[in-house]
Image (tube, rainbow, N blue to C red; front, side, top):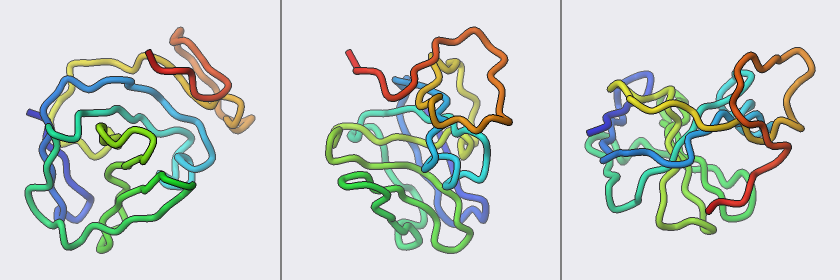
Amino acid sequence: MLRGSCLCGGVRYEAEGPVVHMARCHCVQCRKASGAEFATNASVDVRAFRISTGSELIGSFESSPGNHRCFCTRCGSPLFKRSSASPQQVRLRLGCLDTELDQQPQFHVFVAERPTWSEIHDALPQFATLPERK
């Protein structure tokens, strides 16, 4: 069981793993939402995800059509994303996990948007945009 929470602890969630499509995203939106040079995200089945505490604290921002980034309205922590293109999945912000994850990122996405001062030092595959999921 994966467990995650926001910075203030007001929102807590649980999800059954394993996660899929674990990636380090370098897109401008993920960078701005996280305040970091990239965000590490992964998906879980929507049926395996539940908010255990603090659902009333969850805010949502439609960052692009059909993409809703969900966050804690008290502390601002980005928690997960829901997409109308993939309604069967919830995209988790792995930096908010409270439990260990025994999986590793599979690839980097949106490296075309990576800032020039950010370097990639691993051998994971890199994609200029979002690769087609199989």
